[in-house]
Structure formats: structure tokens, C-alpha cells
Image (tube, rainbow, N blue to C red):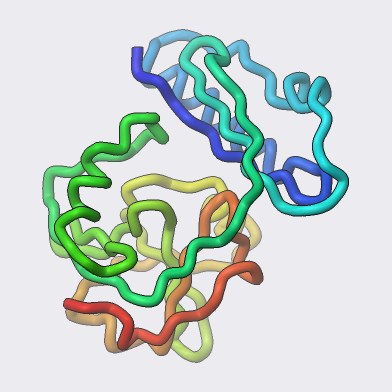
Length: 198
């Protein structure tokens, strides 16, 4: 069995976006193992004590059961340079513990972070989905490697628009930022498009 991960943001003592994490866990267990998920996040969270202040990452490793839990103080990584890296074969539809393919791509460049191009389209960084700003609207790649929980939430709230984005039309945008379970729209910095090395 593949080991899967959920990285849940615990902010000031409260776990956020649990319904989106639960949905992803349910779908992952069903698709990968062919069984119904019996892991209940609300029950699990209710049995935990969290610090009343600060941001933490609750890292769950699971399959058909919880294998381990870890609560880690969260510090946003400093990322100043991005490199486009192409790989038409990479798959990361499920949030697996094995991130070797992503790390292999990241190790190909000296940039702080990579932006993965698959079949001619922008997908994700090695650790996040992406949001692009054209001066008016916010867009996210329509074909990400992983449909992250924050991305799903922001799409449901109609704050983002899905769009096929190629390296050739990156010049349509003014800036971009990462989003993931730990980073909402207002928690990560906008980066100038010039930071992307092609």
C-alpha cells in the first residue's frame, strides 16, 4: 500500500479546511485501495490538544489507517527564484509520502523552487499550487499535478479562475504566488514574473 500524507494547517489552536482534507482522504483511499475510508478527521482532531497560538503543520501519514501524526511549528520557506522544469511523465494525483519524482526535478536546478511544465502547460511547484494575477483577476492552472485543498476551497469560493497557462503566455501576468494547505491567498507574498527562469 502507498503511504499517503495530509498536511493540515493548525492556526491558533484550530485545524482549518477539514472538510476538504476529509474529502481528499476519502477519494484517495477509495481510488488507491478500493475500500471505503473509515478515518474520521473530526474525531481525530477532537482528541488532540493544540497550542492556542501560532501556526503549525499537522502531518498525518496514513493508508487504510493512521500510521503516524506529527505537529510541527510552521515557518514559511523563503523563495526568491523559480525555474521552469519540463517533465511530461510525472504523476502526482495523490498526496503520497513518496515525493522522489518531485525531488528529482527540484535537484536539477539551483533555483529555490521549480515550476513544473507538463505537456506544454504550467502545473505546480514542488510543494504548492499556483495563482497568477493579471492586474484584475486571479487564475490558477487548470491542469495541476495535485488538486490541493486550498486551491479547491478558493475555487469553490469563486476567488480563482481555472485557465490553461503555458510558458509562452506567462507574460500575460504581473505576478504570482504559491498556495497550499499552509498558505491561504493572504498568507503568501506576490512574486514578480521576472523571478521565473525559463
